[in-house]
Image (cartoon, rainbow, N blue to C red; front, side, top):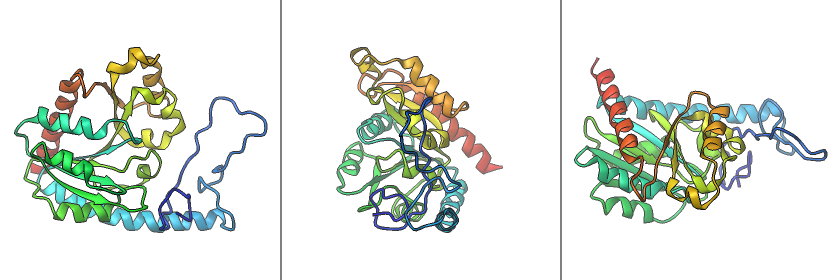
Length: 268
């Protein structure tokens, strides 16, 4: 178990977790993470927790910088897909690959165990490498660098990094990507951005997936967007359904436009 956050990994991860507080607090509720470190651990001072976090993240950042430099040289646009389990990341990714046609791309699949998702991606004809983290709750820069070594990432490619399903730990770890993209199933509840603000603050784009189910789930789509912008006023939002195809073209256009912008920057 992580000695900092108890989030499932047997390594010291040193990442900071903020605990979102709702608009009101019931007397007697318990709130950890109010100190400078954003978390509390028995027997450890806030100063020591910050020291651990700084050490771990600085090492990760060096790996991420190497990944970013390699991707910049070839004008590849990399996105870090983050979400809770069951949001529809892999289905959305498969549909995205199909919609992109002959666009060069590669996929890094992160899970604790199995190669199920990588197998699904490879079935589309795309190249993919599976990264199993064991008890680890997220991908890190070192893992992604190793995965990149096993891929033939062509110039002008899209690189999709599907992170481990988790709305906490991946928020603090740079992988060398151009941006994080948070995927939300509309069935998860409109308050999800308020409960896990770090992830949505770190994301450039939110994809509201499974909108075809919204009429059957008493979902307030406007409240979803309102809460996303409460934690991140600059976040872009696209509503879509990987199953029906609604909104998919807008998502594909977003990807290709950002790839072109990245390629132009790399050429300068």
